[in-house]
Image (cartoon, rainbow, N blue to C red):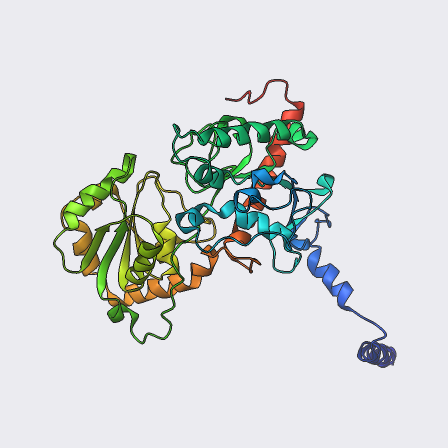
Amino acid sequence: MYGKTICIIVFFVFLIASYSIYMGTVDPTPYFTQLQSLPRGISSSPCNSSTISPQPLRVFMYDLPRKFNIAMMDPHISDVDPISANNLPPWPQTSGIKRQHSVEYWLMASLLHNDVAEKEAVRVFDPESADAFYVPFFSSLSFNTHGKNMTDPDTEFDRLLQVDLMEYLENSNYWQRSGGRDHVIPMTHPNAFRFLRQQVNASILIVADFGRYPKEMARLDKDVVSPYVHVVDDGDDDSTPDPFEARGTLLYFRGNTVRKAEGRIRLKLEKLLAGNSDVHYEKSVATTQNIKVSTEGMRSSKFCLHPAGDTPSSCRLFDAIVSHCIPVIISDKIELPFEDEIDYSEFSVFYSVKEALEPGFILDNLRQFPKEKWLKMWENLKNVSHHFEFQYPPKREDAVNMLWRQVKHKIPNVKLAVHRNRRLKVPDWWL
């Protein structure tokens, strides 16, 4: 009797509850969510990163006098009006080889763009709210503009700009507060900022590689490796039914063969690869016409040779990537951009310098390279090439956004260093 009554009561309670949920007067989701998200013995915490949506990096950009940046592009530009998306001069199409070192320009331009939806970094005008501070000094363009050799008279302008910039920064409360550690300074040309580099060695440096920097100044735990801005036109071979057969040249290289340090391998490779009909190895300098020729050469080759230059890397690697030509990288000390997110072995071939100088070693390997493997690497190459595009306005996952994301990855270590520095009486006591 009692059992039957209890069953009837439970049935009506269940019926009423079901009806309430159906009509929307009761929402059971929060109760189930709490049960799922709060395991026994674990309480909710505001520091739980899984519950926090990713936010763009907040960057304060110094409003430097125009001589430090866009006046090098247009000396007639006003030094009164703030730089904005409306008065920023476009990067000149005829800049030639200077373009490869223009990362500083594209980072600055990205902070002037107002659309936040697709950006890894946004500009803030309150420095107290900033995660990082961008220093828009075009140090690479300054080197290219004000004298390319230490003995050029115009080189003094480059040095004086660096002196003036350091005076400006050292008077900034925010530079003083962190010792410059949370400041982002681009210097992708190997000779950029060469007079006063030691004064910025605590900052987050945007470099193309570490070939010209001592270890105490530049290293992976604080700095960001950037791609060079490619100078060849983008490749587009989606309409080719068989790209492997359409690319008639096995191995392609066109560039300066007289290089320093590890780059001396270029002259040795020239001798080793000479006389092979399926190899194009040509000494050349970067001019507008030669860049056009290189564009066509890379697009018609299966593999593009990338030996070290004056430094471990060079623009040629990124020209090959956007040309969808499988890079053959010969450099024992190269560091690559975005390597925490991109596996270069999926679309590139690597040889040590020792292997490359063994007669016949490279060509024997490449001539036996399976077509199916090449096609897979070629597809992978097409899928990653957008990560190496610099453009304005920036686009999702392009080179500019990838760089800002890399900077964001460095910020926790920066904050750790700043906080420890404020309380330590004996800096770096464990060393």
